Length: 166
View 1 (tube, rainbow, N blue to C red):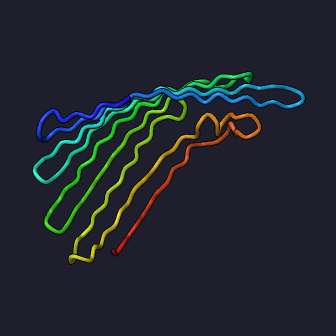
View 2 (cartoon, rainbow, N blue to C red):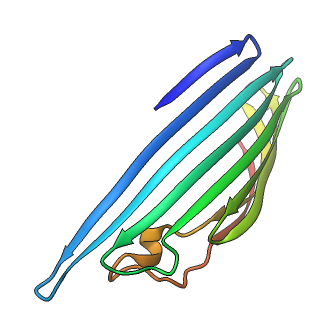
View 3 (cartoon, helix red, strand yellow):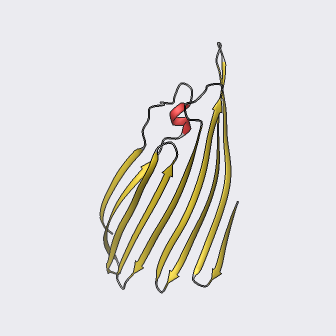
């Protein structure tokens, strides 16, 4: 469920809420096991036009639960996030910076971000670059799914560097 609204000429806001469920049964000749994950999510994202530029502010909350025929060391977690970004538009140059903070009750807090710029050198030529970091916690399926999961998985962290000519 979502709602997208323009409260003023310069402020656009989007609110989203969702629920998902993954319910699996593994049937073998010796046993039947059940594995269920549930997820509730809500987010609020705001774009604020400031002259030619755009500021973005947002917040998100996620509640995840796992249950089944097996008992789990961690059977639920909460992830709360805040994000901010700014898109600066100059004549032939565009610069964008984004930051995000995630607080994960299972894996702790992590900051990530991105900064990039491009230059429109001519009508048909653009040059630029980006630098960003990322963070992704393993899903409950990746941690615990019978016969597949690895309970000792750690979060993934990444660094991306890009230079381009178009």
